[in-house]
Image 1 (cartoon, one colour):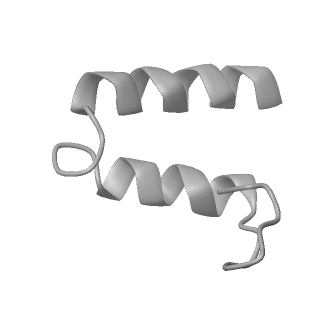
Image 2 (cartoon, helix red, strand yellow):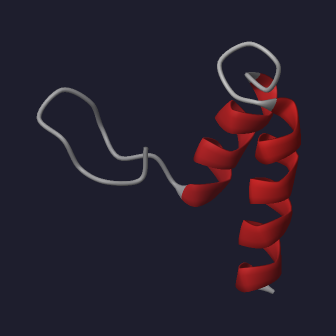
Length: 45
């Protein structure tokens, strides 16, 4: 999501995290989505 491709624009990290969070339970495993968000936010602090 945060890498450039030929078929979509790059998203900023907060935008990507919001998408992952909003799709937890449907497109992404809810436990892994929460753990990933926590990990990324701790790296950015």
